Image (tube, rainbow, N blue to C red; front, side):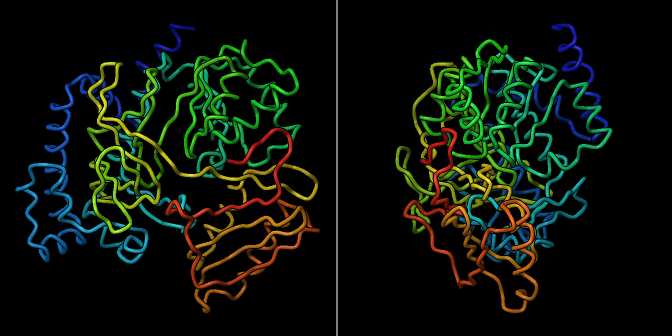
Length: 456
C-alpha cells in the first residue's frame, strides 16, 4: 500500500498534472520549503509576489491597465501589502460588469466557473491554469500536515455538480488510480446516511472530505445508531465550504475517532487557509493576501472581526484583487507552535448552509436548491425559505424583462426534489437584506430536520 501511494504521488500525479499543463508539482515543492520561513521572510516573499502580480496585470489585463492609469498607480513602487489600499475593492457587481475586460490578453487555459457563493448572488468568473495549479499545490501541502497525501484512499462527500457531474469513464478511471471515491450528498436520507457509513467502513479511506454540516449529520446518525466508524481507518476528516461549528467538530470526532481539520476558501477566492495539527488556521500567504475591513471599508487590526477581503496573487489570467468575499472573520498576530511561519486567520464567523426537508421526510442539502437558482439566467440574488414541510418561499431579485418563464424554471425542479405536493411560492423583491453579520443567508429552514442535525 505504501509503495502504491508513493508511486501515485511521485510519478502518476506529476504526469497527470503535466498533461493538464499544470506545474503543480514544482509549486508544491516550493510551498513545502517556504512554509518554514520566518514570518518576516514570508512577508518579504509575499510583497515580491504582489509587486510582480500587479505589474503583470497592469500590462495584460485591460480593466487594470485602465484603472492603474486613472489612479496614477505604479505597481513598481509597491513595497508592502498595505499599498493595496490605493486600489478599489472588487465585488461581484464589478466582475459581472467587466467580465471580458478582466481577462488577460493571452491568458492560458481559462475556464468558466460560476458560484452562488455565500451571498446568494450568482457569479460567473474564469480560472486559468496558474491559479488552479497553485490551489492544488496549497491543498496538497495542507493535507500532508496530517500525514496523508495523494494516492492515499479517500472518500469525498460532496454536493457540487462541477465535481459530481463529470463522472465519465476518464474521470472514473482517474479516481480509481488515485483511490478517490465521490459520494453525492444532495440527498441526506437515513438510507443514504447508512450507505455512506457502509462505504466508509468498506473502503477504509485514510481521509474523508466534505461539508461540515453533512458530515455532522452522518456522524450523528452513526453515534445515535451505534454505527462504528472509529475503526474504519480514517486518520483525518477534512471539512470546508461552510463554517465549522464546535458541536459539528465534536460529533464528527466522536464518530470517526480522529481529528477534524478545517479549511477555508472558495472556488472564487481560492484556497485561503487551512488548519494544522496544532489547531491554528494558516493562511496560504505566499499566494494570498487577506485584509479585514469594517462596514465603511476601513482596515481593522488583528483580533477585530470584519469582512474578509482577498487578493489572490496567482490569478493573472483573471485577477481577484481586493475581492470582497462577504465572509466575516478576523486575523491573528499569534505565532503557531507548529513552527510554520505562515500567518494565522483568527475566527471565521460565516454561517453554515442549511438543510431542507422534502415532503416525504428526506433531508436535502440546501445546495440541491441553490444550484437550481444560481444557473437560471437573469437571477441576480435569491433566498430560499422553508416555512413548513409543504411550503417553500423563494425570494428573487430579477429584472422584469427576465421574469418570463422564471416561475416555472424554479417551481418544476424544486418540486422534483421536494415533492409535487409542495407549494413553491415566488416573491420578486428589489433587494434581499443582509443579516447582522453582514452576510446573506441564502437558505432558511424554519423546519428543523430530524436524524440529529442541529441548526446553528
